[in-house]
Image (cartoon, rainbow, N blue to C red; front, side):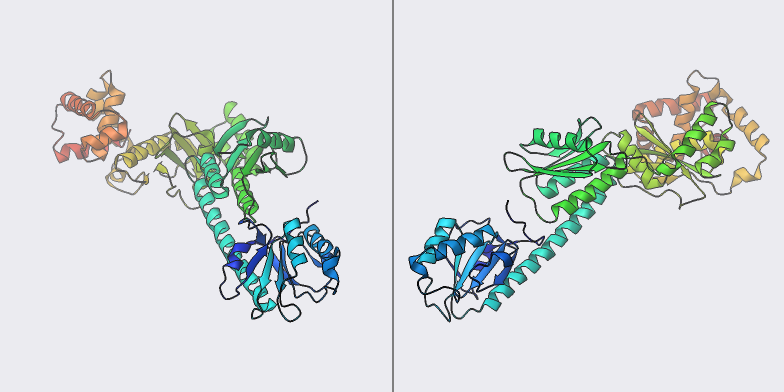
Length: 486
């Protein structure tokens, strides 16, 4: 079994040899650019094995070498023990004991494939050790920076409308391999990146699902490093990672991704799951929404309608949006996500990266249907004006000066010609949106997802049915007042 090396960022031996101030020279052993150092250690013991952790550059001046060493197996035994302890390289000082490196030592290092460095007289072992630790500190700083940047990019990916694929893509990019999310049966749900070890990685994921542990690691026949992480308390999902190499920070990066994926695939605010189930059962059995609302966590609520800015939405993305808004009450209907957000808890809904939002005024449970319509209109306006979030206006105005029954009666009378039409719903919706967007044909078409000519035809039909001029600002004001009563 190969000895374990210290958990420190390694530095390439080539980087140490490149230090001109040290003037080190490799005179034996393989010139492998992949050879790395985990430290430096000075020893004049004939058998340094007990004092090595593995991965060190062992420095010696040859004080321990007997006079007749070249004629026996001394150097072969000495080098073999260094290799057995996991030593990465041997540095031999030319002063004060030896003027040259013993030929038998050079031959032994060649035979055991141990890099042998010649340390010139003007270079002290302390200078070599200090150079190693300086390189290690730089490597540690770079690794910390890499991990921090990876954490930030993974968190940003988790806030996108497609959080799971985005997190997997970022993880695969950061480790230079492949990241896969496996389902309860070990089947691949989503993945990113490339690897030649798909089958071994899937096998490791299935093995982890059948065991009580939360992580597992292995190496594929082609040398690819494999790791698997159980996600969440239910352990129904597994994150699999395959990478050609395993850097010290990769486990930290993968662990951050596993935590994010656990949140994305698990139930948000699972402690309230029983209350939500109870509320659903009561609604299905005929209980009024106002009586059920306390189980859900509030008396006043916002209704939020949302659409992703780019790709199609999926249930996991919808759940992530709900988490961002602070509510697990999410409904995915076609290409629109609806979220019911408590108004008497956290701050009111804020813009979410990658989403366009329409937010209703805060409403009591009895007014949820009206709030739903408000959110839909606000979303249409947000999309038309290319605004990240639009809120339904709820300030005091002319409406508060007119009694509700009189306002509704006036609205019914004014809009009666349109309501009598066979296409009344489409005409009223188009008129309301067109007025809210200050008569813009193009923005209204975007908000309603119809052609601008369709908007023109419907507005012309409304003008004909009402027998009025819709370019008149007084007419528009009166119609807007009437439409607000609907």
